[in-house]
Image (cartoon, rainbow, N blue to C red):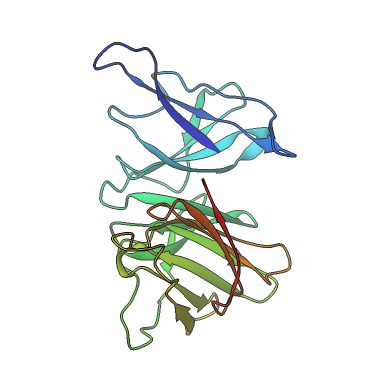
Length: 220
């Protein structure tokens, strides 16, 4: 998890970024990043485990993946030079590489520590490719990735091998004037369920990968 909060209650206070793991629904530890970790006006949208118990944090404002150690000190940059227009919004580890969801580029790229690899060539299912995707979840056992297509209010799945379209679905709206706003998603360990965060509807949706609704949990 990555927590963003003002350093104080003063107007214009700096924003503090605190990656921290949660185990068994409880916070296990917290890392406060100092001012030298991110570029000016940095903004963390995703975190992934790094080397030696550290972290890789996605600075979406500067298009940079920053490596930090367990004490929150910058130890390097993952994947080469910053790409200011990339806006990385989600990170999915895959072996020694990362799947990076580049929101402003509307694409998913597999990135190695040494630099960029070829983006996954997503194939159009006839209803359009993802627009401003907000999250991705990889099912390694079955070889597919689910993408929260924020701009089109739906979930799309693609084959990791060649980007072939495997189906898409649009959850029902939560009510009048509450269109689906997919902010995050995750896949269960056995790949039988997707967990979707609908921020506009204040709810969590549990579905099958094909879109069958299994459970709906409301925030209140």
